[in-house]
Image (cartoon, rainbow, N blue to C red):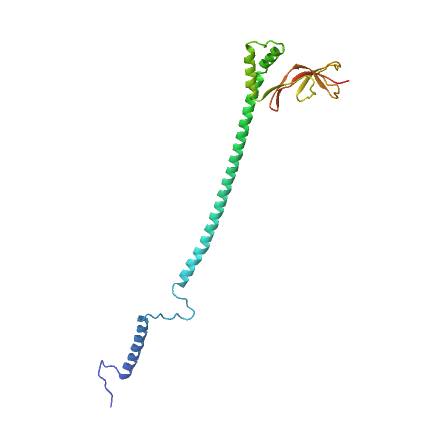
Length: 216
């Protein structure tokens, strides 16, 4: 006798297998809906881990290189600034020194141009032409004003001859009866001042022109 089944109605064994598969799928779906994460497969990294590691590797070395370049640039700029400052200080010192030298040179030129006038005043005073005359006050005022710039007349009888300060125009015999000369002289002395010398501070404007003599 042949078993006959109703068309469209599944067999009982097939129906049991389908029910078991459906139950397992329901359990897995509930686990996911409850918030539990599925464990990764053995040896596999979590999703997105490779991308984060790659981004971190790219940012790290790049940031370090940028910081190093900025430090080198800052050191170069600081060195340039220090060099410019040193050059400015040296320039300022040189300008101040040159300004002082120019001022001294100008004063010296003015004083040297007035030496002939001072020679005439000195000669007139030595001959007594200024005693009681109206020109005496003017001469004294002129010499006093020039003295403020360090002008000084020098050269007198009995001084020891100094080639840096005197210009010997003649050599005379030793005057034994001259009381203005020391008796115990042992070096060349000035015995006659032919023309006085002038100096401004330590600088000789014109050496004293003298006659010298050696003691016997």
